[in-house]
Amino acid sequence: MSSAWNWPLAALLAVAGFFAPVLLGGSPAIYAALVLIAIFAVMSYGLDSIVSDLGEVSLAHTVFFAVGAYVTALLSVRLGLDPVGTLVGTIIAALIAAGVLGLITLRLREFVFSLVTYAVAVVALTVAANWSFIGGSDGLRGIPAFEIGWLGIRAAGDVELWPIAFVLLLATLYVMRSFRRSRLGQAAIMVHLNPRLATMSGIDPQRTRLQVFLFSAPITASAGWLYAYQRAYVSADLLETYFLILMLTAVVIIGRRLLLGPLIGVALILAQEKFWSFGGYVDRIILGSLLILVLAYLPGGLFGLVQALAEARHRVRARAGDTSSQTRPRKADA
Amino acid sequence: MNLTQQLINGLVLGHAYALIAIGWTVLLGVARLVNFGHGQMYMLGAFMTWFSVSRLGLPYLAAIPVAMMAGVAVGYIMQRVMLRLTLAQDLVSIMIVTLGFGYVLHGAAGLIFGSTGQILETPLSTRDIYWGDLWFTWQDIAIVLVAMAFFAILKYVIDNTGIGRTARMVAEDPPLALLAGIDVKKVYFAVFAFEGAAVALAGALVAPRTPILTSMGFDEVIITFVVVVLGGIGSVTGSYVAGIALGLFTAFFGALVSPAYATAAAFGVLISVLVLRPGGLAAAPGGR
Image (cartoon, rainbow over all chains, first blue to last red; front, side, top):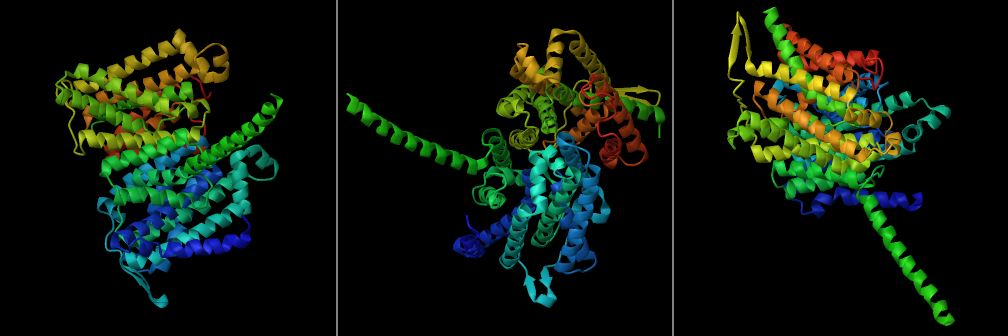
């Protein structure tokens, strides 16, 4: 695809995306669902760079998500900072958290790495539920509306939050696209697919890992930042496995390293949960089964399946063409 | 604080931890596999026992095998679904798939058993023993005895029998084992079935100590993880020792500092060990 028509297409998609809630009927439920889709998609992109590019499984990304939400709640409720201030605080806190976790896990690989990140998430849940400074099991309430006075922005409710969520999503998509074209993105892929070659070409795998970690955490945390405003309260449930499974499924369901993959994945999952729900427990079974089935039977995701089907059809057609061209000379022989 | 009482608590907890972790130890030692659904399988074992006792009216001793059979079934299904990934040793996908299984198990258990907490009472857990100012239940004694027997038998089987030799060979070199005529797939199925049965047994025995909830299982995964890594990945003896050490640590930390943060503290210990020695405490990886 040449970049000459890539940009207009992207712009067209962006405009269509912005008007998506109107196109879908514009009801409050639509706005609510789309704001959540945008937020959770941003959350998933942070994990996407670790799973798809670096090839490791971090199960601690719910922690970054919660760090964003909790920092936003603390700074806005206790210090009265506006969303710009809380976003800066969120990014700094996420970088610190990712730096600490990254350094601890620097020498760990594969499942030990994942185990430690998973344990971090579980321990964070018990800490969040017990530590009274951040509200304990009650959480923190009374987060003010999203309001940046000097820009004249005030967003209360999902309809007014939609433009902000959408801009955050677009910014994330842009950052992800730039990351994949950057030296760091290329290095991550090389470390993932061929660590030895990466080392020989002068890439330090551990350093690359740490850098990708530092890149990914603020993305997921910024989703937590907006989610805090959307919900107006935060509590330990931000660290529940639901968000982890949601992220993982969104990352793998469509296919890895596709720019729009996690967004479409989140949209599919939330559409089911919001509009075709079968109750909490059945929805859990559906989401978990989806994750299992895609990984076990569709390594390329749904996109890979579509590609394989298209190829198979193409092959069948080609074979049909072959046989017809082969039969003719035979008839002539006879 | 009564020192002897905490010592007893710690030993009971330690044997419970070792029993909870043993399925994963074997899974990791023999098949180089991990199972993030381990905690939910523990939950399922506890609830199957509770269901058999309180709803089906089975005696406790008959309920345990029912729970273990359910564990075997879940383990078999998991391995059946993941077989392609297992043979390709795609650990990244396997981790996510097992996490997904845990999530599905939680949903299914909530659907079947409801979301309210239950008390799993056994004929042993209600009978207290007072010895001076010390207190424990017959259930605690059962946990310690079963764990000791289980580990002794397992150790014997792995070191001295044909099954053990086969398992060790698959652990060492799967392609070579295949060449030697071992059905590697069968071994993987067996290992996963064993993991399911072992953790269900642990659930049936250990869960009566506390109220049971379908949302439980996360602490158990962390404990298992700490035991397995500290004990030296895949080492049966190491797991036993690490389990008891962790039990004593948890009991004393809970009594001296705070019971709410005991798991977090155990994890903190693990982190410091991992930073100093990424391979765990045991000298040789794969050693048993």
